[in-house]
Length: 257
Ligand code: SF4
Image (cartoon, rainbow, N blue to C red):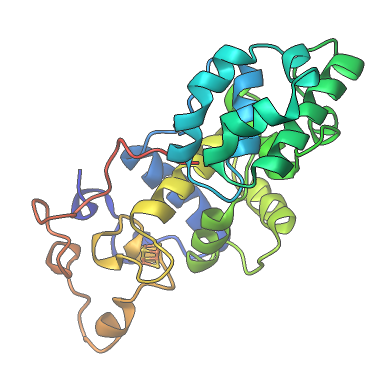
């Protein structure tokens, strides 16, 4: 599917932030999977992987977790871990000393307060060392299939460029977007915004010419060209986004953090 096939045109374009949010959720759902990039088999592994993902890439995390998960399969294993051994296992994920402290602390709190199980509430999750609201929303949405809208740097950038919000604060963004979009779409929308931010709406030079959201994006770099024309240029003729052109559409297999 390419942008020309799915983008609404003319008077059908969404105008308000809420309309754009709903249209964005629908359009991204046609183009990206709601997939979590961190390899995991249960809530504890996802929690550990998400803690490790701070300030590094998912690929790096996925390289260290197989050996880590094999050596430390339970919360009690983290609670009783030797810091040096743990640091060595997670070294490649960066900030290994702080992350090792968080994992040991996480294991201890899980054992002391939650019988060794990962809690499925925002309050319980954010009571764990190394777990903030973003991580908690990942766990809620991905591991427990509960409404959760993780806000990372990609979600902040893309939601502002799309005019869904005009704030940089993650909690305010979460609140505003969750007011506009049904709760069953929160996690999928977040995961897809992350993918879109990585593959198309990248930080330095967004690839507006191949963006499936371009027709209603107030930040599109193609808007200036359209403004000078008496008749809007058809979507099929814009830039290099024609189907078949290199990079003309986002990969459906990319995976978000
Ligand atoms: S049109 Fe450009 S700025 Fe807008 S969402 Fe797409 S890539 Fe980002």
